[in-house]
Amino acid sequence: QVLLVESGGGLVQAGGSLRLSCATSAGTFSSLGMGWFRQAPGKERDFIAGISWSTTKTYYADSVKGRFTISRDNAKKVMYLQMDRLTAEDTAVYYCAATKSGVAYYAPAQATTYAYWGRGTQVTVSS
Image (cartoon, helix red, strand yellow):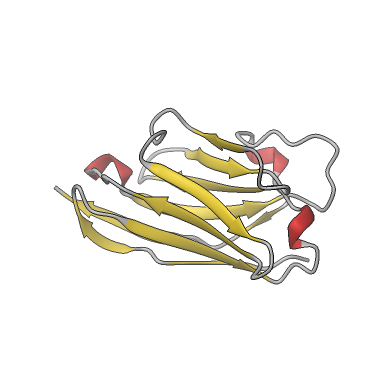
């Protein structure tokens, strides 16, 4: 079982920035594909960004490309999401997710790719 804990959410004005963190208990963190999703009230959970276990490949939804940056520190077992130029449309609960170790196929935008999920952290952007 892998425990994921998000932090860093909060209230920010439009145009501002936040950095989310996702800390894990995984002993094999460096072999996990990781991702960020978000869910706004009344909407489905949407893919935001993903990063492969090797950190060489990153993936973004079109809605955040150029504004958000996903990264990971395998030594610290932490994943990050730097969010810049935030807008009211970015208001949502943000979830981090992890695959099982050594999955053969990593499809970062598919929620079914991930076996483990955090409880989420609220991000509210005031306009």
